[in-house]
Image (cartoon, rainbow, N blue to C red):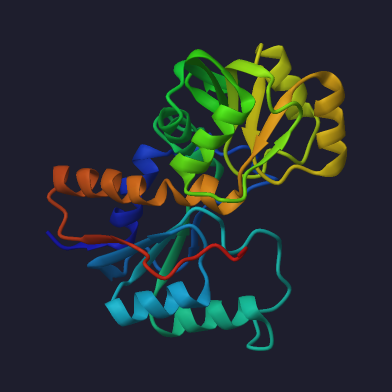
Length: 269
């Protein structure tokens, strides 16, 4: 059966409830642009709503974009063609393209991005680093490798599963690690996540966007950090999100095509 934008976003709302977002004053998830009553037959899923993604959706005849990163994160005072954001919003609106963002709710939820990265790395006995609703829903994940390995070996595994040639190590490359914390995306901006990893008994934290003072703090605290890029740590999940939404749509007999964007690329070369 044909469905509306509201019914289409319910597929992801039921999987990753908006109540699972980190902090309402911090995040901006939900329907960013559009009319929930508008019919939709095709969806494009992406990490970031770039102009290329909007053009792709337009060329594909997609009426809805589902992104991980919110297109609108901070309050805006005007929407003008004089700004990059304004041009994107105006183009999407003019062409009837709705935009939905699933950000920290998709990070936190069971089988979301953190769980997926933990799974790719082969971690066992995985729980939330900072439980939010229960032991399986919350900020980050912590689990155990099958055996102790050198940090340099785990770094190579991160490079392999995330297809990232620019992974860095903070700490001793030959330190042995077994218990590993994962915070997908930019968990390297605050020393409190170093403390959380240490409190959870982790030998190593895998996260992106590590600021200098956090790197120094981790090194002096004896916690090794493996730092992939933000893009690679999260973009790997988009294909999985497409699979999940297709399963949800099929179960509801919804006549909708769900596609992964083919035009996204890492802005860091």
